[in-house]
Length: 406
Ligand code: HEM
Image (cartoon, rainbow, N blue to C red; front, side, top):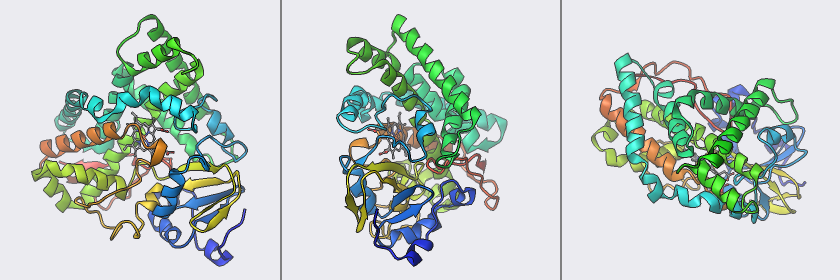
């Protein structure tokens, strides 16, 4: 691997997803990465950092050169095997990716998703009313954690009353991000992953005997019609991925977004009187403090990104949250501006792996904010100066709790 930077420039950066203080606020650390070509980081393994908007986008748009298949021998092997070794839509390249994505793409179109609106509204209202009765409102505990997991559980056809169990499994599996490359995975993480797999294996069996109108039943039907289109292992991995991807990300959009609104009370007031403003506001929440900070690729050949030459087989962190604060793309990127247009952020990725669940996440977030702002006319942060506690994962950025005054 070669690079064009002097060692002085390389020393001035700090990027360590496994350091708690870095995770608490990675944004200042992104600024030096937005100047100059992608840097190379040596953490025992060498990784490139694609942070500038143009560089991150170029990587995402070129799946032939930048593979999504989980790399072997880069310190992530144990993590990659947690949920089995079958390919997933997220961790595959064409033609496997094309085959898998086609199976669910129709289920997630904005039109199909809009049919869920009444049900999402009912769940959100129920949660907000329960918080109002209690007389206290923690956004994470009372809304952002339960809403997405209840919605995705319903979509997948698994009982929503088990959402706490799902949440536990999903939190534990996501905690695997906290294990630095090459370090052993904690036993409790492995146990949660095994339980989650077992649970879905039995759900799949149940659907074989008694199909419903849910997504897992649809995937089972694909498998039974043609195991070449979807093998048994792929079917299980798909169901698990949908639960994980559809849950923590949307939770953190609601949490990170509410924090941004709490810190910008004028924006909160403006949205209360104009709910139509929520659409661009949610795009700004995604750009400003995105739930997914970075994704990962591996080079398939010798190549060049933004002036840095990379050998084949090099890991690349595509830091979409840094790209979304690149002044070359967004004027005044540090400013939270709920009317920002254009706002072509990369929070949902770009190219062939662009988030399947984006229409669902947008709908859930807009219903969550609309319902909360309407029910609590004086909503604000309860303790604006209290230190914030973030959950473990750098890649999926989100708060443990966020108390609001109503
Ligand atoms: C605010 C919420 C969400 C954010 C920020 C988000 C972000 C992302 C990003 C950045 C990617 C691309 C990853 C890559 O290129 O490596 C992605 C892919 C994906 N997301 Fe989401 N996501 C969200 C919600 C959801 C929901 C609700 C679902 C499912 C119900 C979902 C399912 C998926 C799937 C299946 C993929 C893989 C697509 C592919 O590889 O073709 N996501 N998401």
